[in-house]
Length: 144
Image 1 (cartoon, helix red, strand yellow):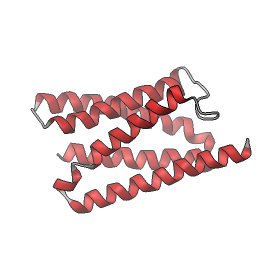
Image 2: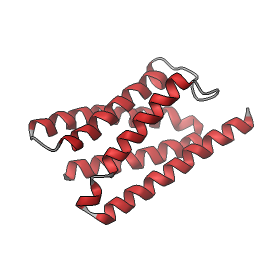
Image 3: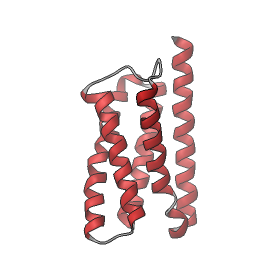
Image 4: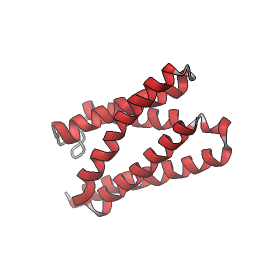
């Protein structure tokens, strides 16, 4: 479980930084985005390790979902950049948002049974980066 917790919090902190750069330092967004999406490779390795160790399926699922989200994000933001955020391309926005929310929920929910303070801290980080993400899109629409 420690690897699960560390990965979850590392991903949350990176997402917080990613959405903050999207809002306040767009020039650094691409660099941090590569790191955020690169965590998908770590997630896939952890998923394989957790399967090999016969860890619960819901822990493996969290890593698989994060890996899938990061693969999609890397594809549309890094490898074959597509303007999909403004204007929103629903064919990308919907799976992107669904995979991100599902991955983060899968990382968050098991913390309830492990440590309630960790659960609260994770939820606060989730709320913070969600607010930053939404604010950055609102500002992008106003400036367009």
